[in-house]
Length: 511
Image 1 (cartoon, rainbow, N blue to C red):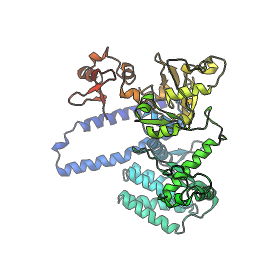
Image 2 (image 1 turned 180 degrees about the horizontal axis):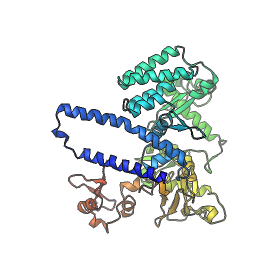
Image 3 (image 1 turned 90 degrees about the vertical axis):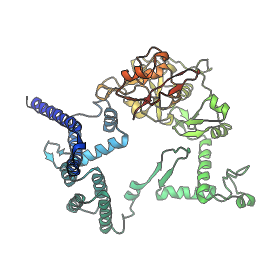
């Protein structure tokens, strides 16, 4: 009875909060004077700063009441990403702040203050904003390990007092100066610190198809690459401008004299050659059932036109001229979907795992993980029985299989998890568990964007337009009435030309 009463009280408070916001949104702010408007904005800003504290309370309680697996997800990050359509970074930020600023309890249920109690109190009072919180968390996390708990708490309190009266930049500058005073010599170069800082970061591929790479190498790792660079990045070595690049032995004097590359460019070319040598050695084993090798998907039209892009098994894009050059010394696999390929693609119940021939077909058809919003390419995927699990009588036939990254493959189970099925067009659909279902898409078009470039009626139905009998009936007025809440239309009405030459109206998704 007490729980029900408390739940009713909370829901009434939430209803009142929404009603208050609607009433405020309906107010005519244009009638306010400058002084009145500034006063209202002060109050609104304070409320905005306070609201995240309630998110922390609710997230902490939700995590105490259940688990991500019980909600049908593999992690709490996935719960937030799917349920409230957040990015992975934003979900991680909210979970991290809830862990540090939300309420805690002991194993016996006794309440504990927040890990960063002063920051949490200032946020709950509306004295600091999200940028202040970010700076404070980073500064406190940057404290040297030799600082004891009492000093850490005093450092936090001092910065929070400052944050209540200055902006994030001033707060960051002050925090960095105080951290410098605490540890002017920097961290001691011990093994634990080196292990913590080691890493290689691959950035997002740009529009020019270039991919940034940064690294912090351990002494051992750099010792390995140091000698490799000394050999393969020497002047005249591995020069792609040479008719016959020197990749072993010693370059000629002419090759050395004609090498005008920078040191950075020579190291880049050396890494490319070393990678090729490693791939050609044949001792790298297998990756997801196929030999470790570069896998590229492209179309016959792009190859014939010498234009367009190929996509690797990891999802990176390669200009078609580079694909053709790489294909000159590669093993080719032709995937034909409407004729026999010569390889057995259906094994029914004879085997559980997919064959190499089936994996090649899945790469050509799916490209990567088929779960909506997943961008993992084949290199990071497993073969999944989409129609029915093998243990439940499913067949190992290519039309019943699909690609799924390890994370998403494990998320498919009968007891409260995701379920998959193959629709009448042979496309895999993912049905989320009830706790994560917000009406999201069931089909992933990320790896097959060509289907959205020239969509047919089936694709339009998949993304929400299923109430039109034909393209002749597909006009602005009818769709505006059917889906007015989620569409924005261009003015004047823009036509979308289909491959067969027909012209029809096409919706433009709103922001």
